[in-house]
Image (tube, helix red, strand yellow):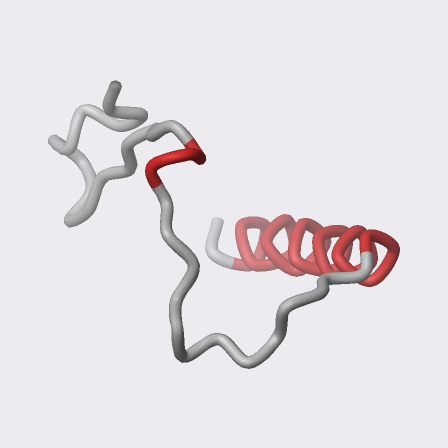
Length: 56
């Protein structure tokens, strides 16, 4: 199911079942610490919000 209508953006996103995603054989990390992922996620959200505000 598309998340964008692709009319206003040069790209679009789709939702797929996570079971259909295969790990990359080139990904050397096998373990991802939950707390570290949450920290990175928070920083990305803050930076995205700041970026959106600056572009307005």
